[in-house]
Length: 388
Image (cartoon, rainbow, N blue to C red; front, side):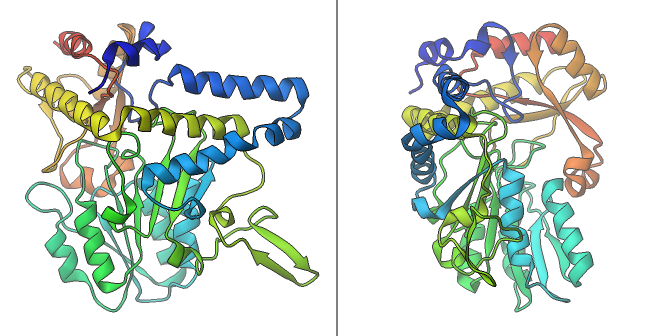
């Protein structure tokens, strides 16, 4: 059970905005803000390197917190600047061995920052990118995926919760297929982390990338990558520096055996500490409790928008999350601007972000309102009244 009064008391932003852009960047809680500002103050007083050395335990805690969040080992975690960097490290590391005729299987709702690298590697190597069809719920069809498996499939890569709606893809079922055939499985969990429980053993993924700024409520410019140990040991990152590897002889280097091989030396230490505090903060509430409230608020918002004249809720999926997308009687950008004038934050999702899915549905853009556990039913009423 979420203590809503406490959650809002520890979220300074709720006193200034009605925030339904948590799928973009959620409001940072006070403990995270204190941790980041505290370390920046320390850097200002004693120096950046010296502050990092003094904060070694806090930095180390970030790895332990992410490992607890994912149910994995600490050495399987890399802390990176953002989810795209983490995802790229995993994908381009694998893609170094791709050849003509190799197949990459992905979802119809795949995110542009993932699909563009697919196309780049396909152009370089002759590999083929194929989107698995959706089922009747609008989510990836697991049976169709199973029917597409052959000896040329080198990667299954999907977005768990797409950026453009409430859909939750059946990631665990996909993982069982990947494990059955021994195919590497890369999961984009940007919208998952902090919104619902994540267990990499249950999901069956070999790699998982996520950001801190969304439902985890961490600072911008933070993210992490998980790589299963059995794959980590044979996955060489596409780029290295003297943090990821050690120069041991004039003509030889050794790559670190753990997740550090996917990191680089320079990082925002204050933000990295903030990420760890944010993960611990989410774990303190309990991901099951967060997921229960977020899902209920999302369903409530859909039920309130659907009857409004001129509005259409556009969410797909058998299981739906706290991201609610809709179209209305005005262009989405205009709706966003008019809501902003009333202190209500939403965002606009455009076709270029999820081109296959949006084209298939004949959509060019939608309003995206994403709830979090600190939102209230009264705030939903306020949003619906403003739309009316």
